[in-house]
Length: 185
Image (cartoon, rainbow, N blue to C red; front, side, top):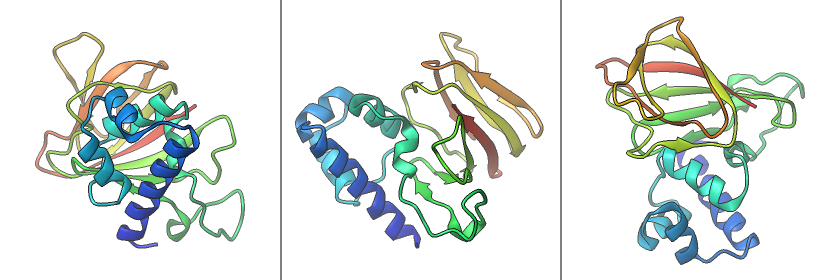
């Protein structure tokens, strides 16, 4: 799949899940504190949600965020993924997530996040039901956690672990790309 196919695939997953849950566009927009127009554009593949938007959508519709990585691609081995076999999500805000786990049915899932310089997860804090952690592979990752106003900047080989429903947001405030390996339960 190319980038546009991946964006359209995400749009279809969001729209179909919303309709399956019998939630109107207006109700979902209210639940995630975004406009109906924005959400409509996301569902048509014309706009990309931020990480915070997609997390809010997943929580509002009662699914884990990893649900949106469920478009499968053919794989040579069911327990291995190779680069061309991976599902990719392109977010607004300069973040690209690649599902590197061979399956999402196990006890954890792994993502590789690529953050362009200045990339951000969104203005609001994430509230994901998954416990998660990360390992900075390259670049710098700045994390705002809980009520702390002062962020923490992580560098290559730094790691972190956050409990479920942790209130946090993150960004790459540097002028170089950042790569992070995320693990979700």
